[in-house]
Amino acid sequence: MKSLADLALLLLAAAASPSAEALKLNQSSAGQAVSGRGLFFLSYGADDPCERSRLAVESVASLPCRQRPKDDPKYCGLAILADNIGYDAVGSKCKDRFDKVTLVTKEQVYTCKMNVLDDLSAAKLCVRSLALAPFKQNIFMQMDAYIVGPSLENIFDVLDQGFDITAAMECCAHSRQSESLATGALAQGWEMQTGVLGFVMNDAVKDHALRSEKIFTEKVGPLEYASAEQSAETLALAKSSVRFYPLPPNFNLERDATLKFQAMLPHVVTHWHYSQLRVGKGAGLPAAEKKSSAGF
Image 1: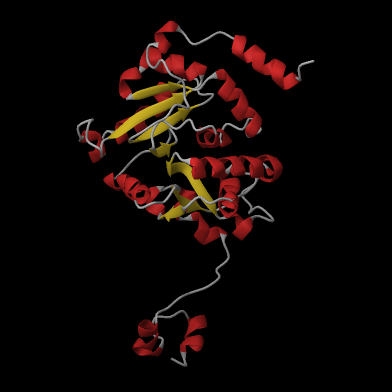
Image 2 (image 1 turned 45 degrees about the vertical axis):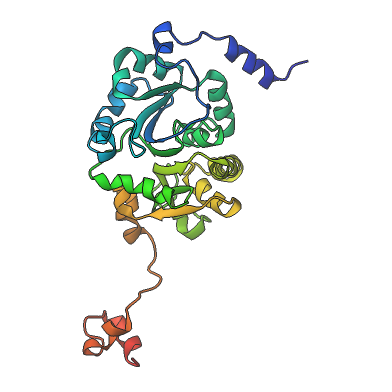
C-alpha cells in the first residue's frame, strides 16, 4: 500500500512535461555538478518571469564581470531557475537574456513545497537544500532587485576568501498582519536579508539550508512573519558549520536593511572613542551622555 506522498509523486511524474521548445534550452535539469561564478534568478510560481526580471537583468549587464570574455575565470554568468510554467515562458520569450535556463523538475518542486510549507518566499531555500544552484559561486537576486553599482562583484571576493555564504542584515521580523515587532524573536527579529545572497554551492551551505527548512517548518513558518524564512536562516547559522560574512547595508538598499532599525529597535549602546571624549570635555555629546564622559 503506497502512502499519499508516494502517490503524489507518481502523479507529478506522470504529469505533462515541458514543451519541446523549452527543452531545447537546456537538456539537463537542476542539480548537476556546476562550476564557475554567476548570478541567478528563481522563477517559482511566476506567471511572467520575462517581464518580472526585465529591469533586474538590464542592471546585471552593467557589471564589469559581464563584460569579460566567457573563458575568463572572472566572467560571471547569468542564469534563471524555473518551474515548468516559468521554463516554458522563458523559452518562448526571453531565453537570449541568460547563459543558462534550468528546469526545476516537478519532483523537485514537490519536495520543495513539502520542505517549506508551500511558502513561495521560503522556496529559495530549496535551491541550496536540493543543490540546484547553477554555479559554484552564486549571487542570488530576487527579480525585483536592481543593481546600482559595480561593487556587487565584491561578493565574489568574499567567497574567494573562504566564506560560504554572505548577505546584508535587516530589521525586523514582524507579523504579515502587523508592523509591530515579533515577540520572542532573537534580538527583536534582526535577521539575514536573503533577497540578495552570495553563496558557494557546497555541503556546508546545503546543510545550513536543510537546517533552516527544519527551523522554518517547526518554529518560524507557523508564526507567519512577513520576512518568511529569514529568521530561520539566521537561527540556523548557530546550528551549522557554514562560514557567514555579514555584508554592509549598501549591498541591499531596502528600507528594512538601511533605515527601519533606527526607528524600530531600542537604543542599546553608544560608543565614543577616548579621543573624541577628551576634546572639549565631552563637547558634542548628547546631554544624557556628557555626565558619563566626565571621568575621561
